[in-house]
Amino acid sequence: MDAARAASIILRKEVRAEMRTRELLQTTVTFVVIVVVLFSFAFEPSAAEARRYGPGLLWIALLFAGSLMLNPSFAKEQANDTIYALRMAPVSAFSIYLGKMLANLLFLAITEAILLPVFAVLYNVSLWPVIGRLAIILLLGAFGLAVTGTVFSAVATQARMREMLLPLLVLPILIPLMIAAVEATDELLEASPVLDRTWLMVLVAFDIIYFAAAWMLSDYLLEE
Image (cartoon, rainbow, N blue to C red; front, side, top):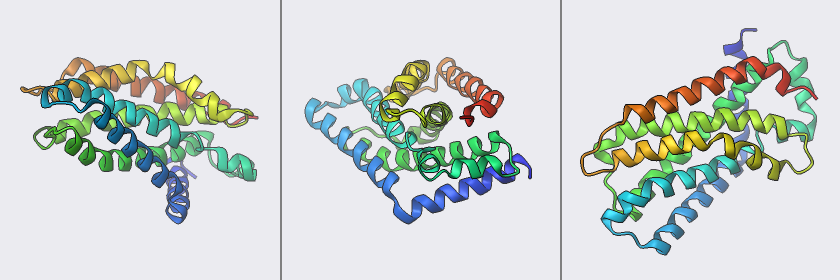
């Protein structure tokens, strides 16, 4: 079975499992909306302050969402020992990783789509004129979160305190991604919005490097 087909099967499995319970999406969306709402009441930003602090607050909320959402990526398989069945299937380890990563990316994209209107209303920021360029930044940022988070979720899944271990492992790695995403978003929320190619290239480079690393090391990620 080729990698693309195997990954699509695992992706469908993850989506069906989530749609049956909706536990992960409901918990994550509720959490990030509460975070954004609390920030808005704490700062009560003016229009200028919203443009200044909004990008950082937006990406902090998305980082929290990623930490919460990516942690159980392999926990279900570990709890039910289905990870062994997956490894015995005639598919590559990278296919398993890719299917999980794409599912996480999809859930993060849904979270972003729900969060953006809330953010725009609470912080009085008009996102419609830059929505296309902002979507590129959000997609690249979500891809980087999904790639690294899924990798370290696989690494930490057999640890006793994996809920604490995953943020400790992944947050330092995500510093370049977060800086580039915040700076690129900040440029888009200025009075004269521009899509800074420097930060865009940083995001693209981060995604390519870590995706390639995940591909090369995928056989080791799922070993005991």
